Length: 146
Image (cartoon, rainbow, N blue to C red):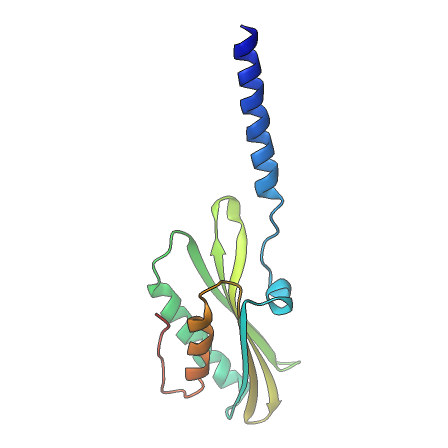
């Protein structure tokens, strides 16, 4: 009986330890992906940032809705017309509603017809996603990453 109780306690201890360890993994946020991206590219687009934002958001939604993943993907965008900035992000949503940003695009109006763009990824192998954004600078190019 004592051996059975010890095994039970070891199993419970391991389960609790694994649960605590899994919870201690920090989610990937917009702030952390900007600070330490796996890959990043910056460039300018000769169009107003509102147009660039609308085109990039449409392209991001279209491309990521086609991707086959084990997790749920969520595409969102936010624009601040006062500061003339915007961002678009793609998040993986896991069990227990954990969100990890794995793709982010920052837009800043440089002038009436010029937008600064920076695209980031937090995933190894995510370079294709970031490079697709550069292709989207030509508003007629809607190439989705592989």
